[in-house]
Length: 180
Image 1 (cartoon, rainbow, N blue to C red):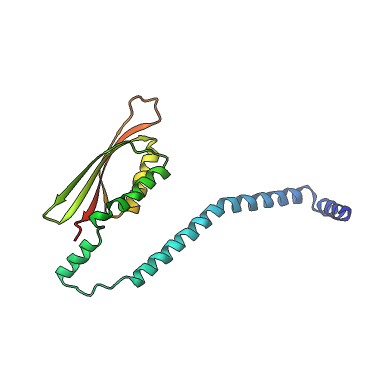
Image 2: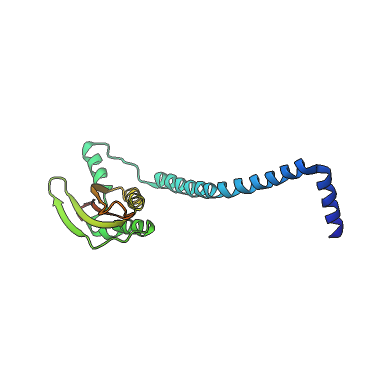
């Protein structure tokens, strides 16, 4: 141990002040680059796993064999979740609210069947309180997680200018197909 201290002090003496400062800056920049690149590397790994899963789903998906307009229409309607699966389709919305740090207050819900299209519209009007960034994160995550969800209306209100929390009224529609 004493020998290594002596060797280290000799190396530092030979490097001089500029060399020691250079080594310290090199160690600092290495630590900074690793600490700033690590989250990006983890995100890259997550995205690559998602892309691989998506490629697998595309490879294993049944090809559309009926290219007629009626077949294309059936494939279009098959995209929508069934009405009986509404709660499973809404789970990512409530998870996005929780992940964004928001608590969804009791909202208004309405179910409308559009006989012309054969779709069921599950409309939700949700009062939300929080920072505007939290609300935007919640909406972005919800719309990304549930492809058949639409944002119909968004209204912000801040009672006083000094408040950092805003009140928002969010109206979303989840499109479902009739159970057959």
